[in-house]
Length: 188
Image (cartoon, rainbow, N blue to C red; front, side, top):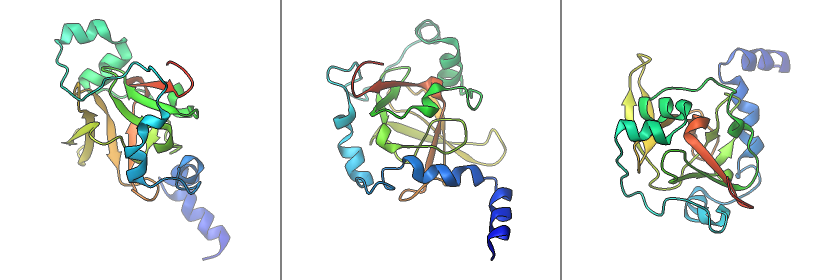
């Protein structure tokens, strides 16, 4: 296949925007740690004294309590499985070292080393901190998708797809309003 046809094929592919971003931020493009090491050593990116949940012990609040606790956009996503518009979250462009936590309960979910630029307009990650999420099958768009939710508070975060970068091949497509970011050098 010549270069012109290759470029045409790439432009016609719905995932074309993902190709360039996969390697841009992936720890594996930099010869970094294995997935297991990233999951095990996530605390190395956590700021000292950061306000995070220390366990995934269930946090159960009434709907009224959640509504008081969360901003309206976060409430819609976390408690009612909404989706924020693509390209609206500043966390999509976040590049500092640190840890992403659940905006509802502060459970650590991802690190900056797990993040990559998917080109989708939402923060994307190729793996998670172990034990951070539970999953469900979602048929809201007719085709089945895998929805993931916080293991502690049950808040909806997004969907996981199998079009991510190596080595996992996964893309955790997360609503930015469902996250808070704690930079390694300070507080969120």
